[in-house]
Length: 147
Image 1: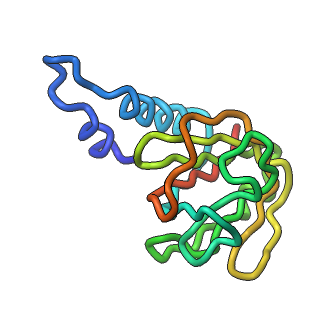
Image 2 (image 1 turned 135 degrees about the vertical axis):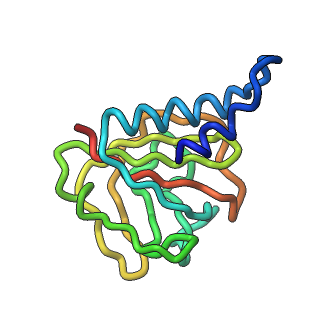
């Protein structure tokens, strides 16, 4: 999230009407910037797998016992993410953050597996906030190397 995007989430605070979800998004992004090297990518949530182009899901969607993130090798806006940094890191995480505030954080437990059009990333879910995003909902995927 850019500084301008963060500031847009904080309207004139004379009335104290900053939403908890907006504040959480800002604090999370600031934490990522201070404690990690990360790349964030725009995706769409898929209620079922395997994910199509521009989509992401898990083997057990939005569940604490999910063990694999399934991430398309092409983002929703046509970018090609690099998985090399998380594949070779001693410690890495993946954040799934929906535009409506839902979030799932998972540790990456090993290198990704190339499945052709998508990557299968082994994970251990650490925390979940909110319910699974709706099918085709906008989701930011942050691939993070923890320092």
